[in-house]
Image 1: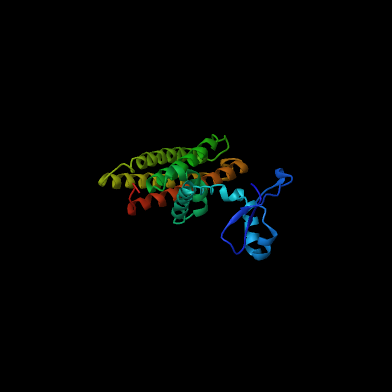
Image 2 (image 1 turned 120 degrees about the vertical axis):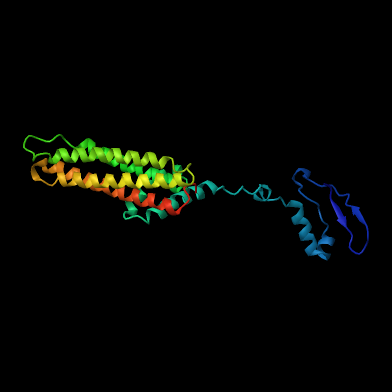
Amino acid sequence: MFPFEFIGGTAGVYWDPSPVSNLSNHSGPVLSNKFKSIYPPVAFLLAAAATWQPAPSALAPAPAPACHGGARAEQAEVEFVRGCCARTLYPRLCHAGLAPHAASVHSSHARLAVASANLTLAALGALAARIPPPGPGAPSGALGDCAKAAASAVDQAARAAERLRGVEQAVGLEVLWRVDDALTWLSAAMTNEDTCADGLWPRKSAPAPVRAELRARVRRAKQYTSIALALVNMLVGNNPRS
C-alpha cells in the first residue's frame, strides 16, 4: 500500500508523494489530516476496515448435530419392557430381569414372553441343582418330593419356552394354541413349585440354612413364573409380530 489523500470538496484523489518511513510496519492506508478533520467518522471506519480480520470461529463450519437416534431407540425398548412389567405382580423384579434383554426383545411382546420363560427356566434349574439328596433322618420322601417336583417344573418351563419361540412367526390359530400350551406348562410348573415348597417345611427335611436357601429359591422361581404367565397372557391381546 502507498500513502494517499482524499481531497474534501473535490472529485479527485491524488497520491501523497511524501515517502513512508518504515514501510514494513505499514498496515493500512495513510489518511491525510485534512481528510480526518473533515470526515472523522468515515476516517475511523476506513482505518478499522483496513486492519479487520475475521474471527476464526466465523470461518469454521458449524459442528454437525450429534445423532441421538440410536439412544432414543434404545430408550424406547427399555421403556417397552418397563411398561409391560408394570402390568405384572412383580414389576421391579420383572424389569430387573428383562431390561438387559431389551435390545434383543426389540419391543416385541412375543420375544419378551420367551425371555421371561427363559428366566423362569433358569431359576428352576438353579433350584433343582441346589436340592441335596435326602439324609437318613429326613421324613419319608419330603426332600425327595421337592427334588422331583423341581425337576418336573424345569421340564415344564422348557416346554413353555419352546412353544413361545414359535409364536412370533405363527399365524392364525397356531398363535392361540402355542399361547394356550405355554400357559398350561407354566401353570403346571407353578404347581410343582408349591409341591417343592411344601417338602421343605419339615424341620428334619434338611439343615436349617439349606432349607432357608431352598425356600428363597422356590419363592424367586414362583415370582418369575408369575411374571411369565402375565406376559404370555398379554399375547392374546397384542400382535406377536409387533
